[in-house]
Image (tube, rainbow, N blue to C red; front, side, top):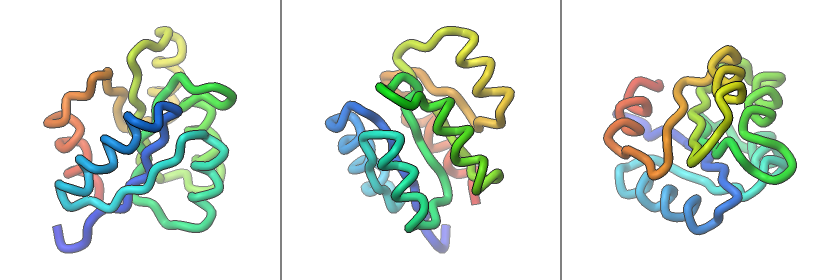
Length: 120
């Protein structure tokens, strides 16, 4: 990879988000953390991210709602959703809206890196 992907990590669990950010950075990716969907949207207005990794269940705006918001101004932005638990209708809605993948927590990092390697 000649230029590392710039990834936005969105999770209301700040410890989880920071841990994931550090793991991504150790693998050569650029990573930025947002602990709310609103903060993520604000960061996306100021940065060109190549991918978003977002928790689904968050207070306020869910990861699926965030997916809709991102696709309003960046319809081709790859988004990977993460969940410890999400209702099946929420998972179905996210897949129908073009999410790259829905990964279960705790994350399978090999699977995550496989999806990230396909993003350019």
